[in-house]
Amino acid sequence: MSTAFGLTAIILVCVATLVVGAFGLRLSRTTSDFYVAGRTVTPIRNASAIGGEYLSAASFLGIAGLVYTSGFDMLWFPVGYTVGYVVLLVLVAAPLRRSGAYTLPDFAEARLESQRVRLLSSALVVAIGWLYLLPQLQGAGIALQLVTGAPSWVGSLVVVIVVVANVAAGGMRSITLVQAMQYWLKLTAIAVPGFVLLAVWLGDGAPAPEVATTPGSHWAEPLSGFGGQDHPAYATYSTILALVLGTMGLPHVLVRFYTNPDGRAARRTTLTVVALLGLFYLFPPVYGVLGRVYLPTLPEGVRPDSIVLALPTAVLPGTAGQLLSAALAGGAFAAFLSTASGLTISVAGVIDQDLLRGRLRRITGEDATVVQGFRVATVLAMAVPYAAARVVEPIGLATTVGLAFAVAASTFCPLLVLGAWWRGLSTVGAAAGLVSGGSLAAAAVIVTMVGGPLGGWPGALLAQPAAWTIPIAFAVTVLVSLATPGRIPRHTSKTMVRLHTPEDLELDRAPGHR
Image (tube, rainbow, N blue to C red):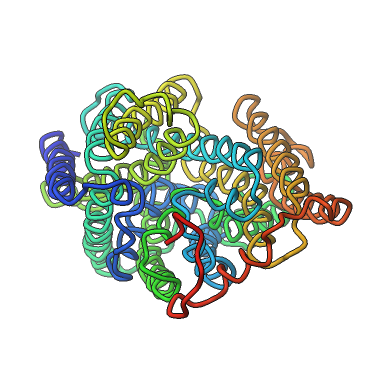
């Protein structure tokens, strides 16, 4: 890839991000603007922004790398990412918006009337956000290193600087404009080169992927070689479960539903998101398959996650291929920036509200105090994952994201589903579910990331823990709640009415829930 072309594309994306973010800064004036964009975001714009932040490094680079390496089984990743929003639409989208909360811990406290459950939720939001930020920063390092040869920490640092500048300056209102723009930028960046490469492939006689014709290869066989694990059928179904149920537990996804004007708009937003994600996910597998045609063996120093960036110059040597690679590099950086921005917003909001609030009272005015604390929290939200990205060995962008989904599904999925639909949920039961699911999933993540992949059933169970951690978390939550009926919140009935009554009916809402 031409260094000049690629670097120019990345710089243009960063500059466009800062310019659009600066425009949003002019509109951010209140606490509500910083946290939920004043709750006035239209469904189309919100859906574009959700698509912008949800299509991360795992989507833009990781899926193609997985398909290239392991074959058609990896197509479950884009399917799971998209179906997760359908589950979110059916179960929790409207109740979340009607709760009137700013963050997921706000919802937990409003539903369960417990400061302890709120603190547990806060700790999990920060942990999931930081785990999800790791592959974004590592992916930025991979992309810039491939384009310029710079050390991987440089690309990560560029993302940190741009994201902190945008998020700290304008909050959610600013980031909403940035992410909506970045969805369409990413779609264009991956679709246009994809169509060109497909045209060249058809012109070459549509050759089959080389690995698919190799005797003994499982690349094109379903449920036969999921990531090279010993029990691919289990790994496949566990991954699907994590992706489908983990979406509703991702803090940067949930916070978006608080920005809609009402529950009806939240549902329309989710439907639009499904369409936008489905459109985007048509393209990453194309790069993985074409990679097997034109790059059956990766060049020295090129990782599978880089196949999207390396493919155009292999198919079209010369200026045309370099321009396509540059466009993809710019789109990849847009993916890192938009997802990192959404994660930083959610993590910074929790750090600000639960750790910093009350420590900056020396600033005059309530809104000034909130904004100042939010900006300090933004720096903290990015500093920790940036440091971790320097010491944690990459295990694959989509793999790391999958682990974040598993933790989210094992913790917040039971809390949200049971909290929105079951009156019998007790404070102790909710806390027990969060602790049990979070502890088991976190232990599996730590062993996988630090100890590396293991063989046999232990390796499969730890690398893909969702199939056993989610049922355990649900079971613990229900059983402990049934054993502690005296700890059901006093105002459960009133809260449930608020969660399930359309906004056009007048309700007596508690202060701060309007």
